[in-house]
Length: 240
Image (cartoon, rainbow, N blue to C red; front, top):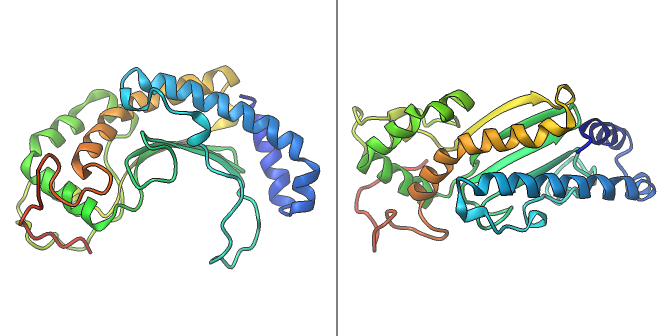
């Protein structure tokens, strides 16, 4: 993908964020979106080598629309100034662990993943899983590839341990998380066009152990009990 051409388009869009300009430049946008779709397809194939659950994904179902939802926003600019994709077995726009990347108007390439807004039952599931299987998180955090790519799990923290969880429980920092995120930024203009897909695949393959762990920890879509259980866990967990 010609990342410099994409950033140039996004910069022009930021200066002319209106439908008249966008319609006049729609052929440029469509060509760039096609390139981005091909990039996402190559990335999916690379991730699929270590995460079979995403192998058959349609790239188009992982790419976010450029149109902004302005219904509840003071900013009524109709278009986003980044190209972005979320790769999960269910595609984009689902509240499940995802590989995520975006290229924005400043030329920042963000490569990461996880869950930005876990539902209460997903947080409760994850905390139960961490308490029941602390060794699994030990293994993840000790993984050399994960540590080199990201180093740690990030996200907003509760001010104190969740209710029902002992203050001396292992992995307390992760238990206090309200989000489960990893990520690192790059300057996309510093990358050769043929190096972009390679970098994304390398980083996402290193991220895969985290995504697989988180996928098991939060449970299947719509799950409200402990992962791997047939019913709810009685342990009280305050997720707020």
